[in-house]
Length: 77
Image (cartoon, rainbow, N blue to C red):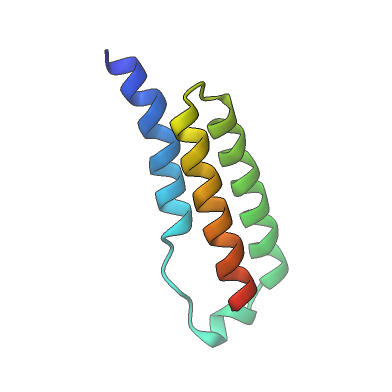
């Protein structure tokens, strides 16, 4: 029984960690911007792979909601 809980919980924990990062100060935003963006792209790609590997439709729906939310936040920033 623990295995299915872990299968569902792990992608959500990773997503919560990624999408709930604290906002940075304006000065630190400009430092190493390319490296940070590349790291974020790799992290999202890895997280997306974990989520897509999960066979539960609920997890995939939650990912799409989080992904759309993050995309709209990036457009408004």
